[in-house]
Length: 276
Ligand code: ADP
Ligand code: MG
Image 1 (tube, protein in one colour):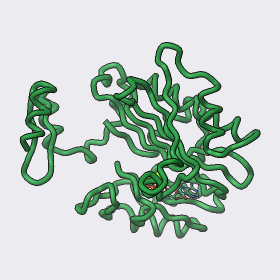
Image 2 (cartoon, rainbow, N blue to C red):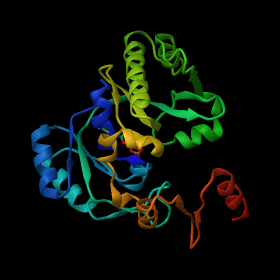
Image 3 (spheres, rainbow, N blue to C red):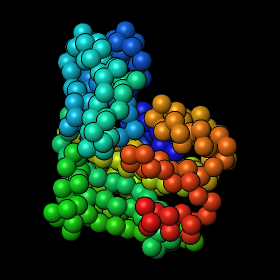
Image 4 (cartoon, rainbow, N blue to C red):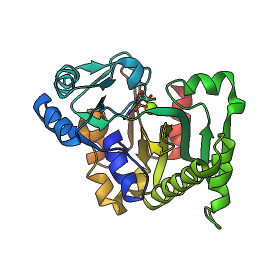
């Protein structure tokens, strides 16, 4: 189960991760009020959909007046946003997040996931964060580093420092980034996340380390013990047929076109996928 950027930021904030001020809006009028409360002078209007690539698709706009926030919010709410992660049909934007703007000096990449090969949580990081991370992975994979954590001994300070130094940080900024990484790891473990991607993690012009984007997904099998996470579910982001199947405790995955996969065991699921 995935959640929105603004929800992930709220959750990470509880673990001490540094996020900017912001508020959610379902109408242009609400957006205007949030912008006034934040105070400016720069705001970023961000479409909230369960997909990345929003910046390139027109779903992230930097603005410099409350009127502009209102205007952009009015345009974004209700629009269908197409990004390289939504597929050609795109996704309807039902709400926008209005966030304080910041002056970015450096965009980094940090993500955590469960690495099935090593049966460990892996921290994946790069100095080349931002909107072209897929290109970095394809053209210069050596710029992406991976550190895995032994679950028996858990995360140590040296893991965090190793990641911070590997992505080119030094001094106080490296120390601040190491702290952020430790808070991300704690949130990941305690909430039974399946993946957490911060792209970008930024260093601002005044040397602050800030979580500027956040994508978070949870292990569906753990949701029974995370009522707070289940409350963050946005049914409009999920396939209606998968939702209906889940109500009846059926494992059903919608695939492209008119195909779906409904099976009752991992081996049969894999064999069925192979046949499809
Ligand atoms: P996506 O990954 O879906 O494109 P992001 O949240 O990563 O969306 O935003 C895209 C880009 O917009 C970021 O890489 C960053 O350069 C810029 N950006 C996002 N939020 C802010 C902000 N609060 N202040 C300044 N720039 C921002
Ligand atoms: Mg991003």
